[in-house]
Image (cartoon, rainbow, N blue to C red):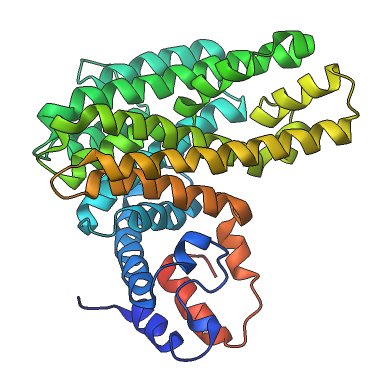
Length: 360
């Protein structure tokens, strides 16, 4: 593999300064557990994918480009056996889902417009006629779908991908309605914990990501192993949802938003706990559920039995990577964290950041 400047910097770091390591400034156990050559390969893929993704995202002003590099890293870490083009196709989808989530979270778009857009995006996902009406996100989604449709497995798996994406759109709508009810009427409007998790595994955007990965990995035996892969998808997406909620708990409490820990804390307070005790209990329960949940993809991975083993590896590893990533980072601020990381070798880190697409 021909390595670019960033990967060369990383190789030098294997023999010396931690600052030159490809994982410098990142606290991600998944990456640190890889062999040095594997780390270099993942970061080389990340850099190459990021370049194209930055150019693509620049055409769509709503897409926040600070997410390009960490999302490229996520897909490269989970599927380092994929081509750069395949990683780009999957990462584009994830960038799109994050941007849709922004529309719901920012609360600047009226509900009637959110419904109109949701219907438009469902139609595009299903390759049905849709009036894009100058909607840049509609245009971006059309491009995402067209890219996936070039893969050989799309005729067999495209319907499942479209259903998963529609499920994510519907789940975001439902979460938005729950949040509005909670802010208007308080705890009485909150869903039950299990209902929240069943919805949340979709609203986090996990299922469409998984199906895009399965399409782009292009293992011809995938269609014969869908029962096992669907079970892995569900377990992985629940873990990602809970890890996100654990990471964002304090922020979402301040913003009056619904979160798995908010629901568990509310229940604990009703049972007589102080708020501090309730938060501690909720945190402990979610951490336990993540740890136990990650064992399920591990066990299922051993039995899925695809021809290459890559589909099941990608599902298990996206869950492992994201859950580790969320312990110390998030997709909105990791670039800022890297810029602020102390270093014994500032020039190496600056060069690495430039290659990673982190603004200087």
